[in-house]
Image 1: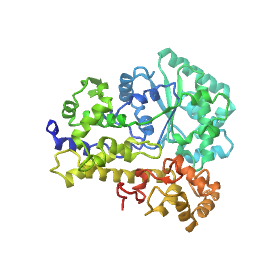
Image 2: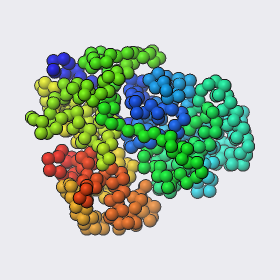
Image 3: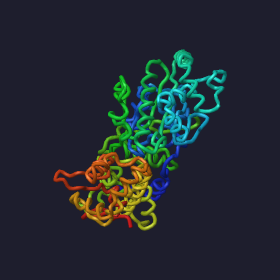
Image 4: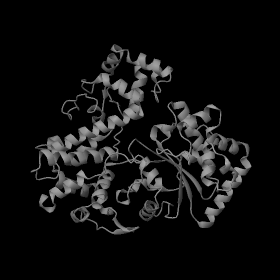
Amino acid sequence: MTGAIDVEKVRKALVALPEGTSHGEAPIPEHVYLPPSHVKAMDPNNSLVTGMRGAGKTFWWSALQEPEVRQLVAQQARGSGLSGDTEVRTGFGVTPATDKYPGKDVLLRLMRRDVEPRIIWRTVQAWQLAPNHHPLRQRETWPARAEYVEDDPEAIDRLFQQRDSEFDGKGTYLLILFDALDRCADDWQDMYRAIRGLLQTALEMRAYRRLRVKMFLRSDQVPESEVADFPDASKVLSSRVELSWPRHELYGLLWNYLANGESGDLIRAFLHEGGWRPTDVGQRSLFALPRAFVKEESQREKFHEIAGRWMGKGPKRGFPYSWIPNHLGDGEGRVSPRSFLSALRTAADDTASRYAECKYTLHYDGIKHGVRQASTIRVNEIREDYPWVDRVLRPLQGMVVPCGFEEIAKRWRMKSLLDGLTEDVEKEAVKLPPRHIGDGPDGVRRDLESLGVFQRLHDGRVNMPDVFRVGYGLGRKGGVRPVR
C-alpha cells in the first residue's frame, strides 16, 4: 500500500502547509477550499455567519475582498448568489483602516456619547456607498459623519436608494463585510450593543434589492436575549450560517491544499478516485476535490496509507483518521481547521526529524507530538479571547480528569481566585469576563462549559477535552501527555 506514494515528498508537502492565521491578509487562490456546508455562507442574502475561533471567519472576510477568489467561489458554488462581478467593501475588521471604518476607540467614544450603534454602522455603510461629490464625503471625522447621518436621514435614504438602483441595473450585489467585532469593545455590554446595532442595519438592508451586509461573528456573540430585542430580528437570525468543520471536511481541506501545492501532481495521482477537473482562475489552473472523495471511507483508506492503520502497535490505541480530530475537539466536538493543519504540519516535521526511516509519511508518535503542539495553539487562542479562562485553569495543573467539580472549586477557593476575579470585573479590568461569575464557582463552570472548555458528564463529574487538558497540564489515564 505505501509503495503507491513517495513518502518523503508527501512529508515535505505536509510540512509546507500554511501556518497560523491570515491576520486579515488575503489568501492565495490555491489555499481556498469551500466545503459544501459553507456554500450558504457565501450567499449575499445570508447576512449572519458564525463560527468558533479558527473556523474561517476572518479567512472569508479577507478572501471575499479578492476578485480572483470571488470568481473561484462563484464557480464552485453556483447556487450561492455570489458572482465574480459582486462588489465588496469592508465595514469593520481585523485590519485597521480608518479611511474605511472607525477603530475601537472611536466606536466606544461615539457609543458613550449616546450615538446609537445602529447610526454608527449606518454611517459606515453610507461612507462606503457615497460618491466623492456627496456631502458626507466633506466630513473629515467619524463623529462628524455620524452627526450628518443622524441629522439628515432623508439624504442617506436617497443615497442608499440611488446606489441600489445602480447595482440592480448591473444585476450584481454590493456586499459590505464586517468581522472581528470582539475587537470593538472590552466588555459584553458594549459588544452586544455594537452587534445589535449591526444586526438592525442588516435587517434594514433587506429592503433593497442589491445592497447587503455580511457579518462574521463568534458563535457566543449572538445570544438572542442580548442582541435580538428589536422588531423582526428573526428575519436576520433565521438566515444564520454556522461555519462548522465535520471530520470529512477537515480532511477535504487537507487534500485540497496538497492537491494544489508544489507536489500537486503526485497527490492527485495518489487520490485518483473521482477524477480531477481543473478550473481556470486568472493565470492559474486549480483543482477542486472530487465529490467522490468527500466520503469518509475513501478518505480513511488514503490517510491510513500515509499515517498507518493504528496509533501504536495495535488497534487498541485507535486509528489515525479518527484519533486526530477526536483529540483536537472541544467540549462540543468542534475542531478548528487551523489546529488540525497545525497538528499535521508538526507531525510531519517531527516524523522527519525523529523517524526519518519510517515507512509511513507520519509516525504515530509524531502525530501525538503534533496534537500536543496544536493544543498549545488552542490554549493561546482562548487566552487571547478570554484572558480570565487562563486565570481559572492554571491552578488546576496536575489534576487528573474526569473529577468531581468540588475538587476544582476547592482549588479556586484555596487561592481566593474567584474573589480576586470578581473584584477585577467590578473595576472593569477584565476583558469579556465570565458572564455568570455572580453565581460563584458553579456560574464559572457554566461559562467554561459554554466555551467548550469543560464537559459535564452524566454523573456530574467534570471532564476537559484533550485540546485544552494537554495545554493546561492536566492528566487523564491513558491520554496524551500534558505539555510541560
